[in-house]
Length: 121
Image (cartoon, rainbow, N blue to C red; front, side, top):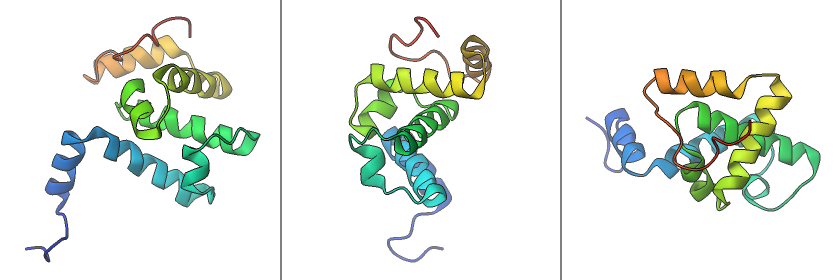
């Protein structure tokens, strides 16, 4: 039994399933804790290299976890094409192959992204 106001893991999973943006927010919170870069910087319009790189890594990580670019964009108050570009930038920075990553997502049952990020990788 949990104390009033405390979510069980099942409650938390159900809430994230109902409101996927909360899962993206958890990814962002993890990057804030890891890097010390404030959340408002990641969510804001700062474009200095350190913040931009962490923001793109967070976008990529959320995408790896199965969130669509549209969902990530909604959680980060950005356009889905900005998120798609951020994901591609991180893929390139890591020397990965976008098509391979998409096939892996499909095999895990995460399906296709719900936007036009299928264009050039």
